[in-house]
Every structure is written in C-alpha cells, then in structure tokens.
Image 1 (cartoon, rainbow, N blue to C red):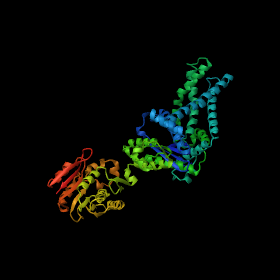
Image 2 (spheres, one colour):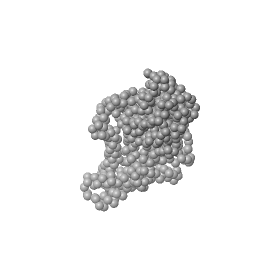
Image 3 (cartoon, rainbow, N blue to C red):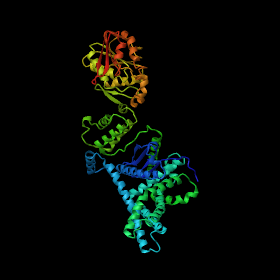
Image 4 (cartoon, rainbow, N blue to C red):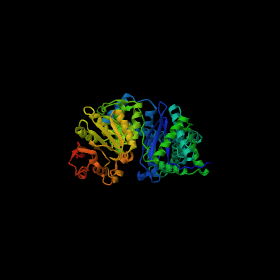
Length: 608
C-alpha cells in the first residue's frame, strides 16, 4: 500500500458547482459560474490557538466541530448557489434591503440559520423518529422476538437508520445538480489525497487518486449510526427500563426519543474521535471498521471531470497559501448585486483591516463612473462591474495604496501618474502650491527640489502659464522618479526642465522661487508608519534622518547661492516640525509659518 507523505489538516465539502476547502487559518470556495469561469471566495478564520478551549477537549470537540461545520457548510452552499445559478429575483432583493435597513440583519445570514434548522429537523425525523417508529411497530407486533429492552430492538432500529440513509442518498441522485455536487465531492477527496501522497496538484495526478477518503463526513455518519446502536442500547437498558419505564406506550416512546436527543452529542463526540483515530493509520487491521464508510462514499462521490478537478485544486491551493502566508489576500465572489450591499461589504472588511473606509467609495466611484456624492443612490452592479470592483478591492486589502493600484491620482486639478517609484501627492501639499502661485511673478525662475512625481512643478508651470511667463526647473536624486515626472509633464503639457540632482548639487543658476517637499520622517519612525507607506512608498523620499530635519539643514547651507536676494523658499514640513525648521533658517531675513485647514503648521516660507 502506498504511504502518505504529507499530513494535512485541510478538509472540505462539495458545494453548488464547486468545492469549499478549510484549513487552520483560512477557507476558500471555488465555484464555476454560469459563464464557465472559476470564481473564488476566500476568508480568514480564527486560528487554532485563538479558538475556544471547547474545540480542544476530546469528545467535546467533536460536537463543537460538527455544529461549526454544519453552519459553515450551509453558508458556503448558499453563497455558491448565488454564483452558480440564476440571479436574485427583485422581490428577494427588496426583502434583503428591507431587513438590512429595518432590523440590521442579513437575509443570507437568516437563510443560513433557517437551512441549518430545517436540515437538523429533517435529520431528526428521518434518522431518529422514523427508525424508532418502525422498530416500535415491529416490537409491538412481535413482542416475544423483539422486546423493547433487547439488543435486537436497537440493531433493527440501527438497520432502519442505515436503510433510510442509503435510500435518501439514492433518492438525491434523481437531481442533476446533486449528481454534479457528488462529482465535486469526488474532486475534493481526490485533490486532498493527491497532496497527501506527495504528488504535484495537476489534473492528471488528481485523476489517479481515489475518490474515497478516511476523513469524509459520509464515514462520520456511518460511525454515528454504529455508535448510536451501542449508546442507545445502554441508555434504553439503564435508564428507560429501570428508572423511567411507565408502561404507557406513547409516553415510553417519547422518553426514548428525548433520551436519544440528549445523547446525540455523546454519539457525535465518540464518532468524531473514532474517525480522527482511524484516519491516522492505514493498517489493514482497521479496514473492517473503515470499509462500510468507504463503501457508502461510493454513493456520495462520483468521478469528476477536468473542470471540477480544477475547482478543487484552486480552492485547496488557496487554503494552503492562506495558512502559510498571513498576507495572502481574501477574495469575494463577483455576482450581480446592489450597490449598497457591495459598498457595505467593502467598508466592513476595510474597517477590519484598519483601512480608511473612504477608499471603498473611491473604488466604486472611479470603477463605476459614479460621483461619490451619488453613491447613496441605489443601482444594480452587474457581474462584470462587480468583478472589476473586487479586483481592485482585493488588491487594496493587501495593503497596496489605492492610487498605486489605479496608477494615477489628482493633484491640484491635474492628473498625476504614480507608482512605487514616487510618493503619492498628499492633499496638504496643495497648500504649498497655493502659496507658491501667490508668490510667483512674471519672468520668475522657479526651482522645485525633491520633485518626485513632479506634481508641484507641473501644477506651478500649468497654473502660472495661464497669465505669467515663468520657467520651472525640477530636481530629484532618483532617476526612476524623474522618469515618472517627465511622463506627467508630457501628459499635462507642462513646460518643466528636469535635472537629476541631490538637492542643489547639479543645479545651475539662481532662482526667484524655490519650493521643496523633502523627506522629513525620522528614521526610527519609519517602521511604525502605516503599512501602505512603510511597505510600498520609496523610503528615499521618506527618510529625513535621525530627527527628520537633515534635508532642511542641507537646504539652509546652500540656499543663498541659489536663491536671489528677495527671493522666497516655500517648504512643506511635518506636523510638529515648523518651529524647529524656523530655527534652522534663523539667519534669513524673513520667515513665517502657514497653517492648514486643520490649524496645523505645515508650510514654512523663507525670504533671503
């Protein structure tokens, strides 16, 4: 017998036209939609070390995991049906919106709970009430052969339970959608087995693997039926016959039924531990215990096709990635939905990731072409639109700045291309441009230091060109940044001369106005910055040295060589740096601070 090489904790289940896999830290559902494309939904789940202590206590954990799997599984089935089948009806949508606004509850959540409750009730009727009822009728007709306190009574009842279970499975085969689900069930088992045997997860390798598996829920159900015979027999003998036997048939029937309900957690707990124990060994000695469950799996699984296997592999690989990489992004199904629902989903997940919720509005506005002021107006988001929105949304969840994802941003009314070669221009920097425009005069020569994307220089050149004839030079030490700045200048038709220079080092001439937004973050503070800034924006444009003031000192040293007498230097500074910067330029003729709209000192103006 071939030995397994990988021990995996990943399990799963078939859903509508797809497969759900669940690991230690993530779960993923891959569904093939009506267009034939695989859609993925992946969510992070609470890791084992943070779960309740009840999930770790033998026998009790079986009950907890069973209930949890039931709820999660029903939720996955409902979500998959939204992707695999028809679009929501209008009445459904109206009800969903009404429930969300009136009672602050989710219709999908209500449906999940309802499905679980109905499923449990149906299981109780089919697998507990009916077997007990049939056996009670036989015992009543043949009391000498099948007395109520005998092992035969419970064996017959267990047999009825197994027969009903098999008949139920056979009956479900009438439905094509259920048959397809059984095929996906087979794909799930084959994919997990392929990984466990150490083979690469390819369609060809998965096909070679068995569609039955030791950890399948079908085997668990067989163990439940087997263990219930023993547990219910003991309970019937010790409790009903000795302590609670009334002699009134209907009352005794009800007592036995209620006692079985109370003992279900015991049965589930024992069955879970047995399943867990047997799945750890491939010894032929335990094959008699495994065989019945494996045979039943031949009914609940069918041979999958290549497309089904692709879904199972996609879900499995995503869970592997999420379990190994805490930064692996979550994903959401792209389905036709209401704008308000999509917006709420995005804002909720952004809040969980400590991302500004306004980013959700920007994504919707720019992707759908809807002004932010009109996002409150309800509309349908088509599947294709939803997919575009979610692609950006999921990338934003990784921590990548929104404007890097879109590739451009707006600064002072001008479109500025941005990527990880340059900082993203901030709104507060527009205050610097405003001050510079008020200062510049006809014929002035302007120099913009640390130009980055060129946003300040371009805005000055374009605005001043409307009524003044000025020349603008922009300098930066980074050739990568200058490439972006030149492209922005061409796009905005701005007449700017770009120079590669470490501040003034390669600059020639004297200027009437110098602007600068230099690096001013303290070196020790960079690791504590928001991950969007820390992990994506260029550190060369952030690091201002030990106290964040290195560049201001260097500018002050050479300022008089490059600024004409009476000329002005306008700089952006950090929120608490203005007074320290003023001290650096204390020998200059004139200095002042300009506050932003929030009253923070952000701009320093120097005259020499």
